[in-house]
Image (cartoon, rainbow, N blue to C red):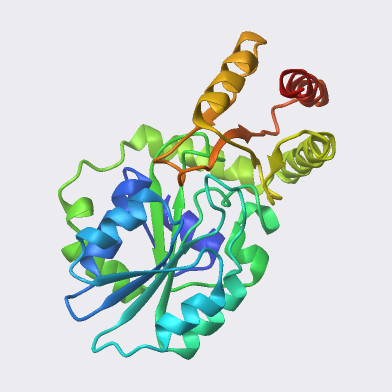
Amino acid sequence: MEQQLADWLGYPRALLFISGFAANQAVLTALTAADDRILADKLSHASLLEAATHSPAQLRRFAHNQPDSLQKLLNKPCSGQTLVVTEGVFSMDGDSAPLAAIQQHTAAAGAWLLVDDAHGIGVRGAAGRGSCELQGVKPELLVVTFGKAFGLSGAAVLCQEPVAEYLLQYARHLIYSTAMPPAQAFALQAALLRIQQGDDLRQRLQQRITQFRCGAAALPLQLGASETAIQPLLVGDNQQTVALAEQLRAAGLWVTAIRPPTVPPGGARLRITLSAAHESEDIDRLLEVLHGVCH
């Protein structure tokens, strides 16, 4: 399974982890030292920020999806090595990182780039290879997880041979955790094959995204700037967000109400997640109910 993932994504090695959280914790704690620094997008996933906080390195955060903000931090001196951390697709806003610009700044500074593509792998790029392939970027460290498009659990870290060997010796989350069960690896192989052959599903998903965004443009809520399956409708008020979600649930529609601390204060939203399994009629029904409860 590891070799299949490595071949598919164009890396010498892939290491399987029991979860995406464990993969991020393992990489950031094992690969950094006290004189190093981690520069992370401000809206990076909690697993990345927590791992960076617990690592021996210094953590600094740059403005969300702002390469110029990253450049300012890269220009500051560092006695050790620098690791830049971002995501392919951000889980609460559904927006995509400008990976090409981020990689250009990172490489110019002699730093490494880690991209967590949990929400991009399987649904973006040629044959579902994800956000990095779509933008023509190859980070030193690529983390892919299997809880979204793969429909399973677990994760993998894609890297060069020496890094993989180092992680095998020093990544505690890998060494001291129970390995992925063979049955799960077998299921991942089947899911990978379907993803590789899934242009029909990716096209169908894109059609549903376009359909939803066209219909939601007239809603009295702010529609997030997302071209992905994650479509946030910003409400602002916590109680109003919960009330809207409850009205949708009563109509047979499961839409999650996201509130602080998951998002910043004032950023409460309805997080709509679209799927290739949705029919066009499902999107019409969702839009119909949304227009009804919002007016």
